[in-house]
Length: 198
Image (cartoon, rainbow, N blue to C red; front, side, top):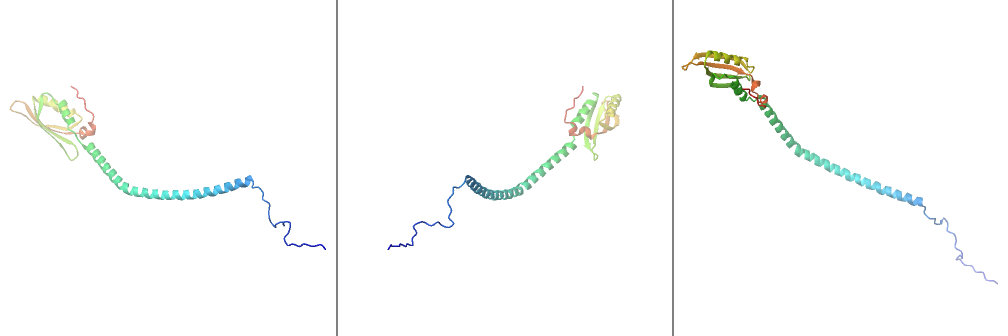
């Protein structure tokens, strides 16, 4: 008889259940994976960059606060001191009187036949300058002309000639008092030189 061979090892390979054939990966799939992983890397990088910027901002804010605390009081003191100096200088310039215009006025308005022996100028409480002069003129007529010149000058107010008498040399001795307008003698009004007319 024929012999029957029975073997438990199959001669054909049996198909595996659920096994798939490998298909080539498509270009769209590769592009999608590249974009996906790139966006993950970019998102992570942006997250850490944002954290880095936030830390730098906080550090710089703290530095600014410290700098303000150090600089601001010194700056304020310096500016305040400078403002006081400017205010004091302005006050001094606005109220400062100079004698030069007074001497120029006396030089231009005094007749050659009149001379002064004493001169005094004082500032009263109202700020007006009180001018006191003592002197002599050759004649009463010369003194009357001098009184008329002082009376017409806009910078001399309340001109008064008194104590008229003849002295030992035959000249007329006199005393003069009058007020000079403070605006005429203010420094800020006399910063440009006056031109005297001969």
